[in-house]
Image (tube, rainbow, N blue to C red; front, side, top):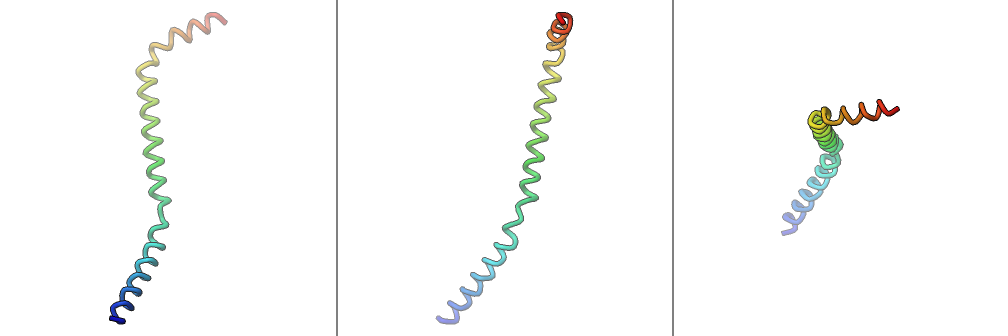
Amino acid sequence: MQGLKSQINTLSLRLRETLRTKGGSEAGVSAVEYSLLVAFIATVIFAIVATLGAQLVPGFEHVVAGL
């Protein structure tokens, strides 16, 4: 029984060490998430400008003519 406890403790220590060394490397994951978010926001802005751009031109021309 003592040998089993010793093996479990050893396995537990190895698991903790592995998780500590491999688990802390999330910088690459967050960078990918942020780049996907930026790409999504840019796509939405592009779609809005492409859709409403032609409708906004007369308003800007009216403002410029009033200056």
